[in-house]
Length: 377
View 1 (cartoon, rainbow, N blue to C red):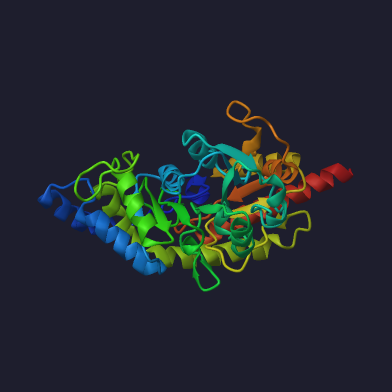
View 2 (tube, rainbow, N blue to C red; view 1 turned 60 degrees about the vertical axis):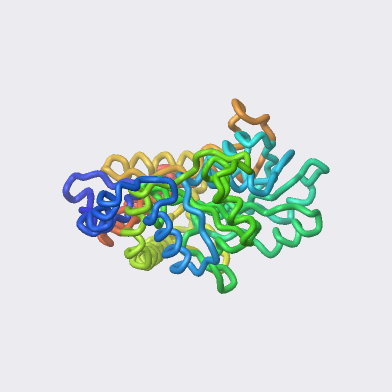
């Protein structure tokens, strides 16, 4: 596995590192790719990757694609969405980009400041005659309230397309979170629980949508090589699929490890009353450790203290995407904007040692304590 990078050897600790299979295991799969000479166009390794990931996660189907942003765009195309799509402002810009690139208008609904996911109680007031879908975002692997969202969608005849980039390995009411909604779009980016370096996937609720997604992925061609959809190039290569297939053998190990270290962080940091944690709905894959501070000034002080020890957390998601006025008109989103200024994700990955988890947590605690002691003086 990856060599551990830690401050004890003066190496940088980043917010995350990819979980990687031993390279000889990847090479064994690539040997077959080289022998066949098939590198793309829905090759045998891509098909095996789709089957094995679906089997591991308990999915009915999976369409592997080039990245998670394309996965959202494919979902919009497959569902034939137009007009307005309701989504969360507390997300990565790719959610916003995918909607705009597919000629739809993002309409933001503020988040629940405890769960950090879209607030279902605020959705209906944003629905108009132009609304075609709800695009909830499962933030840091924490599930949105899908029963409430599905009920709203049914009442208003809307589609549900989930941004499930963080949701691999999450179960919700006894089944994969990717099984909820009309389509779930996920990511296999290097930072995600299962990675193909770059990659993504679409999980459809029925076979017709599944077949449509496969056509969209390959320029709109059907099995007879007739163009029957408005498609594009969304294919995953054999090389990327090979990496994902090798890494899949370590997914459960990575999931178990993340959960263990997540709760180690929480155990240490819970003694500080000035810190808040994300409220988890049911299950989570614990792929990130977000920490919410009293204000941005304290966050920046803690970030600086960590950086001085070669530790580099990340401000996910900052700023709130409703403030990206170069691409969308500004609409105030109080909770999302507020949380975005006060949230910091601490390093969390398979090769991060528990001693470094303790070091990071103690640095956070000591910095906050010193900041408050200085303020009292």
